[in-house]
Length: 358
Image (tube, rainbow, N blue to C red):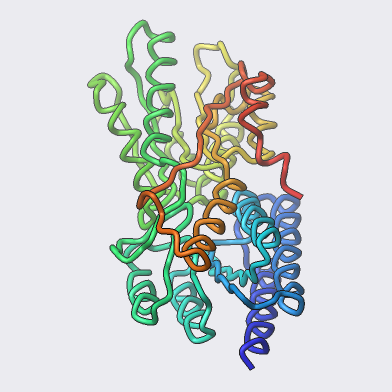
């Protein structure tokens, strides 16, 4: 009976992901379609594995969206590690909706999974679901973003504050080269107002930029939606004819920003005094292409495949081997990709995750 419930859960996961093709994110049609199909394949693989798994360890994974290239890579890392360890992995896609994610976690609790890994969309809103899992003696790990709960065993992520600092330092250096001092007008196009990753990236950015009183910051939120970033940046460009740089906090924001700059006829090649710096985060294929073409100047790249694999391994070690995480937070590596180093051996050693997604 328990195995039947797990099979049903995996099938439900697949149907939810397939539904995203009709109501997913606003990325370009080609990119979104490909990403959604790949996401569906990953969840289908998880569903098929239920029949053959020995059932000794069942781990649930709730993520924000399987239409995002970065998150597909993270699930791939988790699924590969699950296959290696013989773990049954149940994948859920909340489609960036807190109540959906809460309901999914409560459903995992009812299915008596051994552990839950969650990437919270709303760090505060997810608390009641984490509390419910804890009361049911089901350990909870978070990945990428985290929740406001002391019951989380470990958070596996990038250091998002450091990402913001790296972006701020790069912008300050570039403005110093341009003007002879770190001054100018910079846009902070935030990723999210509700998730820890979004707020931490903004906080790290301000840690650096606020040290320069001659840098003016224009701040808006775009929720990592291409169309929202396009529209928001269009409004900013119409109101400001002196933008020097944009910290985009994520690839979708950067894609929308670049589209807005081009549509406003404000794109100038790197080295031109009117060039607007665009700094992204994550490091998907489209942004790598934009860096090579000079339309995106830098991207703070993460390691989502490693992130997913590490989260699954730590959850498994806790459940099966009784191994407590060494720390409450575990970070994966970061690398600032620029037009100067994109083809370097150093970056090759770090790894371009977007080129490893199957």
